[in-house]
Image (cartoon, rainbow, N blue to C red; front, side, top):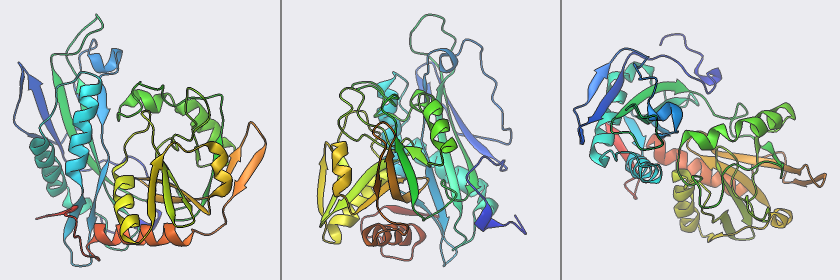
Length: 337
């Protein structure tokens, strides 16, 4: 991709040359197939269309200073997709086949991987859908797993610059004991209305409270929440939060840097006690938060116009591991030949 303005790429869909597909039929997963088509042939009664049998993942590949391509913690994405499959009764794809498909998709689209220090990366989207026709509410007997990729810039256009969040108690992202802890499309559909309202109001995302009591912080729509208080990294514990692989990694790094870790219910009033607040996930890594506006109480919590010191340290350390600039002593990165 010559003459590409990588620094202003933005986070959006772009066609690349190939995707990888694998079908589940008659109780078995088939072999990986390479396709150059960006469309799929789907039965009109497919369970993915009618009953939401769909799960997806998001991960990234990075080109290092040494020219090597690295992919971050794809085994964790594979396991999380298996959890999502259990949650909505889909056939589970073996971890090894998931990883094989990701490697192949990266290799087939190498020319689309952004250069080192461009601020961009190769976004990888594994997708699993129910393809078998059912008109009764029941699981499909057939599934399609796909991996497609595209070069992307930061999820939030501001990049590693503080943004604003808004609390709107009228809206729920996911119900307790529902599908909030799975990466399924329905959770994101449920966030579109309030997400659109937030953006119209100048906010980057909604900060959701728990659906049952509206007492505890859940997550920031597309990302997990964390706060820094004193010498402690605090992140919510809830059955309706998607377990973020980025957050899991940041917790390890924060502990290594000397921070205490608290994973617990976080009352929304505690926003007044945090020195730093951030949203973390694959797409954004860390998006520092400068302000949380409580729309129901017309009150704001302000954290500053620049990223906080701990957010900056954690962001730089995680990205250094992803790009091969720091030692990967945890075995998080795989080099793709």
